[in-house]
Image 1: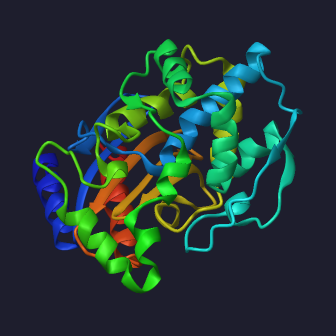
Image 2: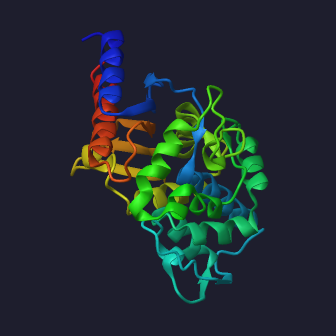
Length: 300
């Protein structure tokens, strides 16, 4: 199948599965890439924790922060499904900045992330991205705002109503009645922008090698492996990634490194058209389409 026919078929598969998808797969050695609407910006959800990790580690390298510094962190006490780590703690905890980095990036802990944002605010994270020529990702707010959506207000029994609102209340210009889904107010990035960040972390760039290595290590220890990992993890590959989930958004970015030396950066950003919280079929379809793009590039 030629490339144009392949992309047409994959678009159809995504729509048939109830997804709008923005994807990009890039060979990190040759620069060749394949994508579907890779320049469309979408709200980042928890993907923003990767730029936050980069900014925090860079400030530790500069001596502006000390990773051993202990911070008193208030518990999240969140009881709705989804949040992890300190977000579900009942009591205060004292945790080092280094360990907050682990919780924020590897466990996607929102309370840990916001403790780091208190040290490096969203505007400063964006500035550090810009210092490295990474301009397609915008960081506007902390992650606590992601836990204040209609889904939390409606409760589990009415989650479908929150998802229906997320699907139907948008505008043609990607504004939205739900602020976290409004690209003029939310943290945002396109598939191409996320792949550019991954390339800067995995290839020689203006990011200091020690900083890039540490962020890669955090992503390699990501514990949320239900989305793309089943199609990219094996004894002959290393999969390093970060997921992002918010209402009808399901994202994942990552790099698959093959034992033969090939490496591919992958960004999959999706919007579900189905008003339901649990959609394992959508997760599997995301991975299937991303792997098909990778396989096509790998065999060119």
